[in-house]
Amino acid sequence: MNKKQYYTLREANSVEILSLIDNSLDFLSSIDKEQVQNVRKWTKEKKQSDFSRLLLAEHGFSMLIRVFSDTSAHSILFDTGSSPEGVIVNAERMGVNLSDIEAIVLSHGHPDHSGGLLSVVKAVKKPGLPIIVHEDMFKTRGIVNTDGTIRRHEALPLDDKVKPARYVRTKQPYLLADNTIFVTGEIPSQTSFEKGLSQHRALIDGKWEPEPWLRDDRAIVINLRQKGLIVLSGCGHAGIVNTVLFAKQITGIDEVYAVMGGFHLAGKEPESRISQTVGELKRLNPKLIAPSHCTGWRGIYAIYQAMPQAFMWNSVGNLYRFQ
Image (cartoon, rainbow, N blue to C red):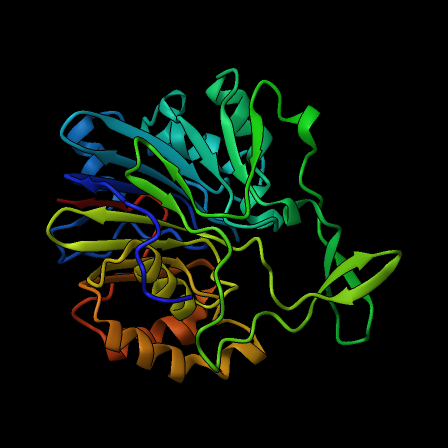
């Protein structure tokens, strides 16, 4: 694919991204970035927090995204965590109204990103609520164990289970929120070192077949006025560098302002490409980088060492305000 601009992504005046579900919870550490507040800070401003019970952290991912332009404001949910209760409980305890959500985007079909889907649909209560998916998310999938057995993943609910919401199936890039939020669609490989997930399998014609490239893996891209792209990845199975390069390519916007989410650098094979990944991310030079979820402590530490001024440790409840 050449560098022609394929899609026009409208500029956003400001963006808010709230971490609803992630692997860690830390509301005590100080934060020295003006764009980020921990949950105790911003909920104190709202006077709606309930810390008689703590927020929930789990091996999962969910971000609530609000985009503001000259004429409108929009809210979408990116992934729904792994448990039925995580997003619902955390939203309630932070005083967040999920009924404002206009669409749900699933980054890919793994259950740590879709486990809360049915609970969220029930909470939003909107007939026709679009859930943006890729057809491959409905495959039967699993991970091969060291003894050769397969650990089967929980299947994504079928269409009749998500009513009154509805699935919108697309492999192509998809614009939301009055063209201010962009779902990348399938992400091509451009790097030599990002090679997918070798242990991943799909059940095809009754046989477990290798499926290292999860073609359903997509990311969210937003164009922040006068500052550049915000790229939000669920797991980054396509490779976080591939993801950012593709976001630049299909929008025609070269400046990268923030890179956030899961970068999938945890595990024996992914950890072998940490140094190459971090080197390329440093060259991309984002002003803020917040690796989380499946990035793993080795990858997160390496990113911190390479980009200490841009680095942000994500926690459940972190609120990012970009303007």
